[in-house]
Amino acid sequence: MKQLIDQNLLQEHNAKQEAAVTSDYNALAEKLDRSGVRIDTILEQAKQFTVAVPSWGVGTGGTRFARFPGKGEPRNIFEKLDDCSVIQLLSQATPAVSLHIPWDRPKDPNELRQYAEQYGLHFDAMNSNTFQDQIGQEESYKFGSLTHTNKAVREQAIAHNIDVVELGQKLGSKALTVWVGDGSNFPGQQHFKNSFSHYLDSIKTVYNSLPDDWNMLLEHKIFEPAFYSTVIQDWGSSYLAAKETGERCLSLVDLGHHAPNVNIEMIVSRLAQFGKLGGFHFNDSKYGDDDLDSGSINPYQLFLIFNELTDIRAQDPSYRPFYMLDQSHNVTDPIESLMYSAAEVQRAFVKSLLVDRQALTQYQETNDPMMAQASLKQAYNLDVEPILQMARLHTGGAIDPVSCYRASGYRAAVAKARPADPNKTGSGIV
Ligand code: RM4
Ligand code: MN
Ligand code: MN
Image (tube, rainbow, N blue to C red; front, side, top):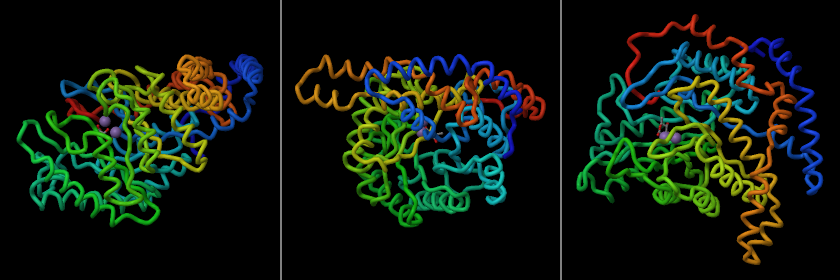
């Protein structure tokens, strides 16, 4: 398999830390054993854990005020895949990439698929884009896309989504994620019922064109770019639309798309209870921002979400929603952020496996809030880093991905090979 980080460097990096990691791991094994938990079963699950990376996350993001480009940013989908391969090689938790069309549209889908395969990468959910106008398109999305008052605009947006599904089939993807920014900026600007009805009609048409083994994931977002009302602003609208549309139409929860303090873990439980939880965009948020690094602001919330997911999977072990990162890296090296974030999501997952579920149920049934919350904290407060490190060591990744990446000089090398285009500064999300 093609590797962009020198194997010798990786081996040396791991060799230096292996003894310390083994000793920490054994100490944790002993501790867990005292509560009847076998560490190797947790390690196996940690090794199996994966989360897809967003192709658009490997470029430097920006705000509407400015974008400060990083060095050696990828200039096309092939260079984006190069960066994604480094993330996967060192973290061993991100073998899939989620593409955004038309940003990542390849001339030859076969060539792109093969390019990914040489790195051991494959493609996760495809994302359509009707939140900006594309060069040469007839109709404008200024006043909406799938929900637009004008049928011709809706048809153009529907056709784009169907086109993305067709491309995704050639790339081996199995899902379409639909996020629309459609909404309004002024009270009275948009008829709530009519715009939602248009949305339902549009997504039903897209859904009817889906291959049998595909899922459609509907993503809600409280606001932005529309600042007064957004057609799919909450999980309720998303659920209603998914339910109206069909069995394989599900809701996707992007953590950053809620008001501060919203109980996202309860949304997760609700959607799952009614069979409509299809996937996640992991990230974090502090105010109205939606794309900070996973676990950087509220790691406890991330853990509580995985606590729900692990609870759901205890009833149905085959249940596996789509897991993707969706972040915008404005001030960090995106490769570092994505490796670190993948490990943060994996950490929350591993900790959720350590919750004593029997004890928790008992405390819930006997109305013992103190011990119920303590049983969650007991798992959350454990330092599971040795499990994550050992998982990476076993699967050929780096014990410490960020320091190994820095030692590799990859960024400096791509900075030389990919000279920045001076015309491509400005603001934006990708
Ligand atoms: C949106 C949403 C979508 C993502 C775009 C770039 O806020 O999170 O998932 O595709 O940003
Ligand atoms: Mn998202
Ligand atoms: Mn977002």
